[in-house]
Length: 216
Image (cartoon, rainbow, N blue to C red):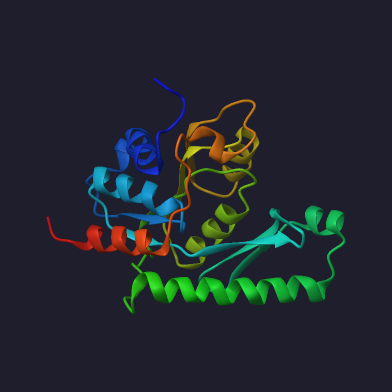
């Protein structure tokens, strides 16, 4: 099998094969991290016959090096920080607060846009599958796990098509289970493992969520 995924939808179908034990269970809910995690999560939810929702999460990037995360925020007021990156980047508290506020505004915007006024699926007492298109540092997924714990999930499962091996190991200390379909060495970047890694749009996210709610 080609180690690369053709796109996020195909990655979701391949990931779902690793999640068969969660299929056809009343206690399972699938949560995609927008934007890129939603097409993956849609295919997982479809294969498992499970409800789909979004779990808005935003990375907190170092100014001028935005791809380097010093933390992340999630819906429900959750924030996780990486003290090592903050120290290395010499970030002051004022800068951290400003970046957090900016990203919180965008997170709230997306939550309203994607749900269209509908409440979040209740994760309390359920097995929550947190799905993204891949994990590099894992900053946003750590925030997602913390958010699901705060929402009372009985079990939190991290599920991704591809991830850096050390990140899978680190997240295994936070989640109840971590399913990484591919853990290549060298890893380099998530996008390297997709033939098509074009950005997912807000309209695509809304369309997949609407389709997942359709009966039958």
